[in-house]
Length: 399
Image (tube, rainbow, N blue to C red; front, top):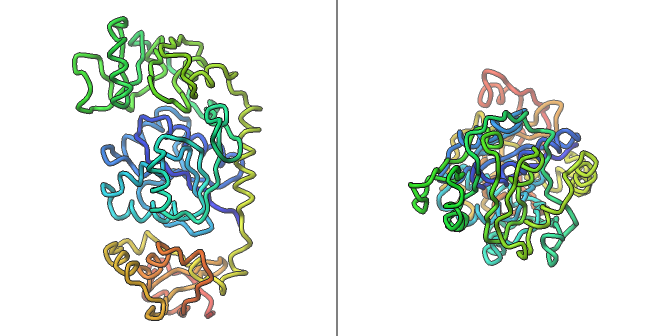
């Protein structure tokens, strides 16, 4: 049985982390590792902006899920930077209930995280909040000499890019997607009158400058030169690597003594298929090492682990009720969970007890050998009460 890998992205639609995440999703699927990208949009941005970002840059748009997903505890969560977890933690009050539950369930599983130091104080708090069952670190030691985990590089995979249409509209490109970047650009912009600044519509932008709000269509084809001005720690630059790949100009307008991904990526060779394949194999091995035995062999030991929800049918989840059950949970007062066993697959679909199961998942009970009473109903009940238009056939089988 193949584990699903869920790559979680909580960054903004114009950020490099969205692109690294989608590229890894494509690459893992191409190597036979079933993977999907789960995007929990930044509260200031829309689902449509993320879709536009991906469709504009890549040959395909597939295996992308937004907002709501219920994983099994055997599924693995991958983040292309620890900040994906800390951003979710910092923004948690701004998400809707579907998004909150999805984040809890995904980050409560095994997590593979690329080491970063964006939020050194908040990251431990985020782990305490989401309580992942296990965290496996990957680290680029040239960027983070004091990091932890298995050596792994964050490399752009150009194989998935659409052909770039050269349609020059501005001479110089600046990246000002946060206030720190933008303030630094303002120190240099007078030297570059023909410019476009990729940014967001925030209060700290200067309306007198030529601001282009991300995501920008055909961004790599619109400019001649990328002017790299980031003043603070930059772990994995993308734009100047992309410009060098296209044979375009790059001006490195920052202190070359800054020890971060800037000079590391500047000096690295352009990624080849061989480099990418060898690097990706490290991640695939780590994923494969976490695979568990077939769930049917252990269902009596941990029944919660094998319960499924059909979200196309059970759409009305009362999240206040879930959290109330979580905060006052008593296994001795838990009524039996009613479910159906799908014929020819080892899945037990919940028809009564969904809120109890979600509360137990949030409490981490699916990662223990907790035993609960379960009733597996007859085929007739399934047809009558669960999927009247498209019934799931079941065995009359109980535990």
